[in-house]
Length: 127
Image 1 (cartoon, helix red, strand yellow):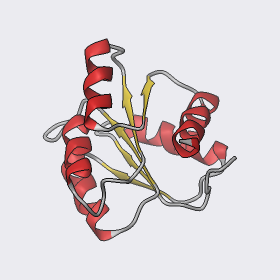
Image 2: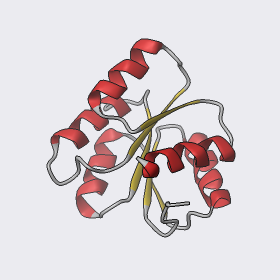
Image 3: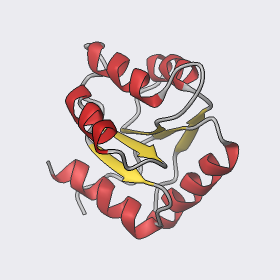
Image 4: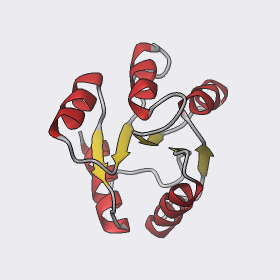
């Protein structure tokens, strides 16, 4: 696996339970350094304070959605190469297409397990 398990990962979701679930799945995979943000605005300020190796963000959040966060990350020269995985409950093809166009590295539809998350992360780091 070409994934550095020691890299810091930022999980962005306004639903605390989902943050806990993703954090636990990441720990099962072997990630130790997992940080969290409750929305896109908080995530952006954390991304400016610290260098993360991966962002896993929910799509549906207020006041800044994961999609808006993704676009801001891709527009920022210091962040635009950051691997970004979008998580959503909706498998709408127009959302997947919009996220791809905005530069998302991978896309996960809820619910998912550790194996799905691991393979999505591996795919991001193989490319």
